Image (cartoon, rainbow, N blue to C red; front, side, top):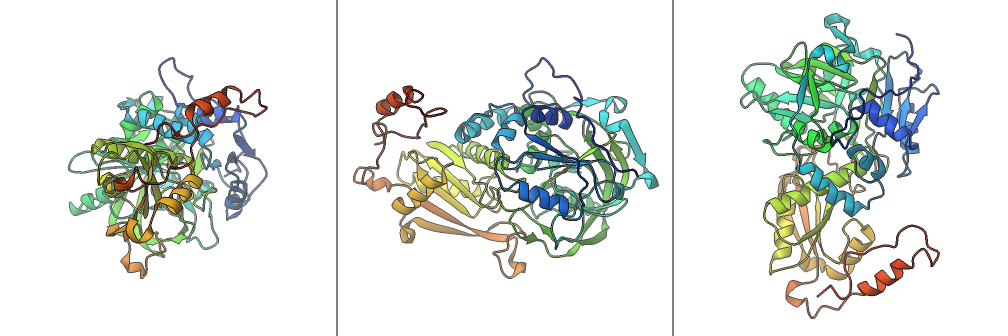
Length: 512
């Protein structure tokens, strides 16, 4: 096929007059971020074998690195590649979900809780009205090797078409549709691997179909809007609909359409979608892949393969690729930290835990997976232990999270400097650190040896709060008086300082 050429990013549909917050599709969102300088087009020819990803990795060493859209490749390829779609940019996350990009991290987490509570059911477009059906190919006409699929790292086992994909599966018993993000190695024109970690719903759906001696139907979108990608990457309960959550975050129904082969929906405005089946007897060697941990994950081993039967795409499709790396160059960056923090906070309140003042899953801790910090206003004996235990095992944090830290409400959990101060002055390691063993973890955790011990893990529960029994005797910390802070804040510009005056989680006259 001919090499793809850069084309203008058109709006797929006009902005509606409803309460939609997010962009209606990937192209509309790219137009939105390009208008404010958050998109960089790379028109120079680049090699799909490591060079594209090296450019992304080097550019994304800065947290404010833009999204990168590549349009010319050393190998013949049809389409374009978007990488660092969200990355470490809280600004692009805010724009994607319609929040104020000037908001602070605590504000974005709180606002994200609000929009993730909303549920809007999807609607279905007739296939002929769906942009994704601009081109439909079936059977031998499908050739996924014609698209620009990167190899990211020197020791990767192959090229990965699915790192920022969204896969749809269905529970054969309940009919519940799951939306998940799973790594997918390209094996051939109509063969794509699908690796799922133990305990993930996509893998459980697959096994349920196989238990009935039936192939598992699956659809996968490889060019998706940021909201659908973000929701697919989160952990939700088995009875929660990711499609309704995505609609709630968008502020309008997610538009789906029918496929031509399997009985599963496909996103009507996606860039490229495949339909196919997972057969229990069909496997191919997969992995390793440079992962979000900053290490190669998954030894080369046989994994299930999607037998691709149909392909739907827009002309000159944009494939979304996610670089997995150490922060800040990892696609699981600011957005994941904000959304996972909001989910943990929501889980704790749903469990009836009182006094939660803030939560943050730091993106530098294995892209938000490795550590969660919870700020609480202590109200009763054992409150800190309750928070630590429930935070460690709530649905949003149970998977992989190793370090759960509780801090008092005068500590901002999003500020690592303040968290380290609390750990250094309020935590006695011999008395204030407990452990949970044989917890739900991942095969990607390199700290567990031998490898057969995975995916079981452990968790450290760290009490970095003032002892409840000694609150009144504990030395007072140095805090500003609120009246003095507010007086200075009113004169901030007059005093010659830029921006808004900083605020703090607690003040001297508010902390008992």
